[in-house]
Structure formats: C-alpha cells, structure tokens
Image (cartoon, rainbow, N blue to C red):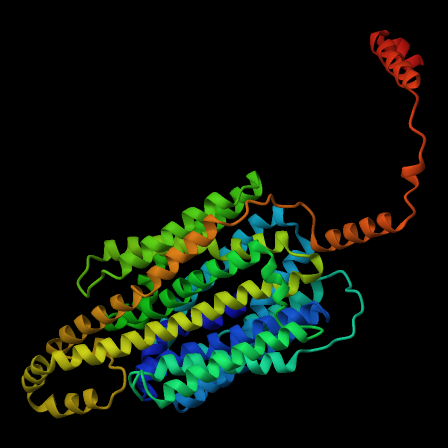
Length: 542
C-alpha cells in the first residue's frame, strides 16, 4: 500500500509543472489523474474476482510489478498523451493493490480486531500522502519532475521481498476459473464513455449535441447489457446478488461520496496552492499537511476505538458530517483567504475521509459471505474509485469552464497588465494564448494577481460539487444496519459454515433422544445443592 500511495502522491504537487512542461491544458491535467482512477476503478472488481479464484499472494506481487513498471515508464514521457497512457496502465496495478490488500487482511484478521489495523492502513496512507508531495516537490525543484516516477522502485523491491518471505495465507479450495471477459469489456465501455463525455462536453462540443447522444446513449446501453450479462454469467464480475445485502448497497452509496471528496481534494488542493497562492511544488506539499493530519489522527484514533468498544456507526456518522463541512467550507476559499482558515477546512475534510473510507470496507466484510469477501471488498473499493473518477472529471470540467469564463471576463484587465510589462509583453501574450496551464509562481506580479484570483474562484466552485454527494453519503450511513463486528477471520468463518453444514447433513439424532424424567432432574438439582452446602474439603474428597 505504501508503494502504491507513494507513487501516486509523489507526482501530485508536480503535476502543474509536468503539464506545463509537456504543453498540456486543463483537460490534459484532468485526464492524467482520471486515466489512473478510471483503470483502477475498472480493474478493482476484476482483481477481487481473481482473488476468490487464485493465489492472493501471487496476485498482489503481480499487481506491484505492473504498477511500478508502468510508473517508471511514465517518467520517460515526451507528451501528455504518452503520460496518460502509462498512467492508465499504472491504474491496473493500483486496482490490484487496493482490492487485494483488503482481502488479504480479511484472511488473517477478524473484523472486530481489524479496526486498529484499518487505523494502521490509514497511517500508512497518511505518511505516504504527507511524504509523497513533500518528496515530490523537493525532487522537482532539485533534479526535475521525471525523477518522481522512479522514486517508488526501491520501495517496490523491498515490498516484494517482504511479501515473499513473511506473507503466509491459508490455501483456497480449488476452483475452475471462469473470467467474465464480456462483463469487463461492457463495464469499461460504459465508464469510459461517460467520463470522456463529462470531460469534453462544453469545450470540444456542445452539451446537447450528436456527440452527447452517442456517448451518453452508448454508456447507458453498455450499462444495461452489463447488468444482463452479470445476471446470466456463472462467475459474474460484480455479483448483483450482493445488492440484496442492505449493508453492501448503502456502503456503496456512501463510498461514492467519500471517493469524490478524497480524490477531488488531493488533486485540486495541490492546484489551488500553486495556481491560486503562487506556491512552489515543495511549498504546496507542506501546505496540504493539515488535511493529512486530519486523516492520520482520525483514522488511527477511530480504528483503535472501534476495536476496543466494537461500535462503528457513531464514528461513521461523525465522519460524514465532517465530510460535508469540509467540502462546503473549501468551496468558500479565495486566493487571499487566511491560511489558518484554509488549514482548518482541510483538516475537517481529512478527518471525515479518515473516519469513513476504510471503515465502510470493514462493515461490508463483516456482513458478506466468507466465500465472497474478494468481490464484496473490491465492490466497495470499485464504487469509491468510480465516484472519485467521476468526481475528478466533473470537478475538472467545471474548473476548466469556469476558468475560461473568468479569463474572458478579465480580458480588459489582462490586456492592461500585459501592456505594462514593456519588452516582456509579447512573451507573456504568447504564453497565455498557448492554452497550456500557466506557471503562476513565475508570472510578473501584475498578471499573477489576476490569475491567482481566477484559479481560486474556479477551484472553490469545483468543491461545491462534492457537497450534495457528501449529504447523500450521510443519509446512506444513517440507514446502515448496526450489525456487531464478529471476532472470526474469513478462514474461521468458512470452517464454521462448513461445520454447520456437516451438522445439518447428519441424521438428526438429537430428535430421537429420550427426554430426562422429571424425578431425575429434581434428583440432580438436590445433589448439586447438597454439594454446594458441603465443606470445601468434603467436596474435594468426593
């Protein structure tokens, strides 16, 4: 998990610099992030299904290799298209790490004990999320952004060695593997068409146009066909019977909002720090620490409390309320908002994510059939990633539209600022007309103030989109059944269910057992009372 998080977050503060150097625009910026999230979302249920069929240890090692090799290859990109392609492959490995880490934990730790381990997962994520941007900013400012893509390699090698030597999992029952290839294709088509439409509509073509009809219509048809195929498949990619479980259905709804808040914040807060406050990549990493502190403290603290008391619902309710508060307050920020207030808003959002993200997977694992732990865990993770992917796409599209609109409104002020630059005026005029994301920290003061204001308004407008989803998440959590956490691991639950089945299969000998006579019961009771009244030595002698 540390390898996965580090490789993802180390690039976050450098993305504005990377996209600027590769000549990309806001759409390219959004797709560099969305490509990874999209393939992560699509591949997560595939890995989850494979986890119920094949060796989980081998699968997680394969996932690490795919992830790290694709990440390293992305470091050699010469344009945004190549970078997006390698980031898409990277997402396939990330989906495996996200799904399999949860499944493997369920194999060896019971849900009741898992609270504290979920806290440790949150701590690992927090350390990677804090250290990643800081390390990435330092590397970018010192050696150049390409080295960000190579930094995870030594950690990946260490992870592979540690997994090989120390991870010992119970063997799975032999099954004949049947992969739902048609389901994978239909799911990929539906999600991809929807995201491409959200990203391009309003800029490359009108919202109501022939392209919209084809893309949205294609996504709907693919989704319907996916449902039909899943109902008929012997080994469905996402068993629709899971939705009969009320806990699973409500957790999925809640996870979508958590995904939007988590991924949206990590992407657009880094952009806010650099484009609206003129920070360098290193400074941007330092400025996002309050959000990570909220995530770290709430994740570890709540995980320990859940393990100690066995109660989880109050923490999820508080977390979803904090999610709403954080998202709404971040929608009010400007380029000159007091940074203490911005830090408080980030802390609240981080605390909300820390309380809800891992624990939604925990409660689903607690109520799912032990033979479906893989698909159930990956199902929640899938919808969280899908929510994050759609959220980042929608927020990115809203940001691009808002920035274009605000630049048009500020045309007179921009012209006046450029004219005041003297001999540098032609250079900055060309830079602004190129359409690529500007490097605000390098701009002259006259231009910098205008663009900081424009991007602050655009990014705060984007955060408003996350608020209604966070409210839906709270409603879903309120209706979650408050099922106590079991103390049995997945392996123990499978063995217990097999034992129950064997008991039911045996001829019911108890039904023909002779009931004890009333006199025998009275005699037994009298003897017990007599022993209780006898001196301790006499009892011992008997």
